[in-house]
Length: 249
Ligand SMILES: Nc1ncnc2c1ncn2[C@@H]1O[C@H](COP(=O)(O)OP(=O)(O)OP(=O)(O)O)[C@@H](O)[C@H]1O
Image (cartoon, rainbow, N blue to C red; front, side):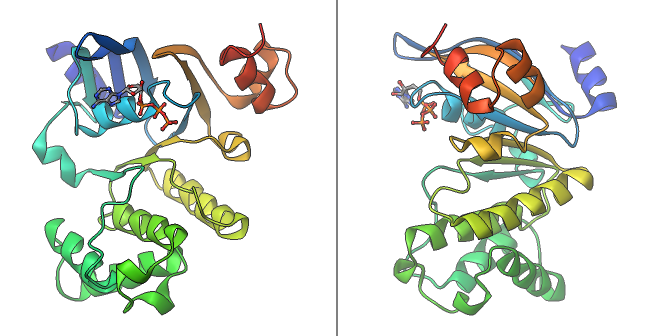
């Protein structure tokens, strides 16, 4: 274990090694091994129920593997201290409806150790990113579904985490803003942020540096979008996905 930790400290990134996750007697993830490089945008694709959320929760350290190890930036997960380094956006929004957006941001910013001018500046910056500046003072209970997603995203990036883990971040977000958000992911990646994102949206999958295709809790293939297309003689990621997802063989 020590060797793995030292190696990954050198290389950074994320190493998932022989991970199983069982719920009761049900094996939901089966022997997953995967490496995500530092500053990479890694997309996880798979049919509904294939295990994507389960896997990203393990990487974020919110849940624990039944077998195998996960190392993030040289630290074996789960580890409480890593919460500072990881931004996690869940599929369902974890927001306080009875508070305004500003109060929600303020709460999470304080939790992450931001204060004073830096906190205020960063709160404004992330709200601009998700185009919610005008709704800062609005109660979150009065937000639409898409607005809640955007606020959740703003909170996930608030503390400038080294690793960003996003579970279907752009559901309910219109195409124009989605494009702007993906531009920002690219910029963050260029600045060194490692990003793992689950998605069902194929044009988003194409924007990832590499993709992992999951089916029935097994990692069926890993590669760049072009590699996956070439390996399956497909012209689109969607076609490749259908091959690896089991709809065509
Ligand atoms: N806490 C739990 N207890 C029991 N079964 C669970 C639990 N969490 C997830 N599962 C099961 O694990 C499997 C994988 O679920 P998961 O949410 O990881 O899939 P997913 O690929 O993220 O699906 P979707 O794309 O619909 O979000 C499903 O069969 C689900 O019912």
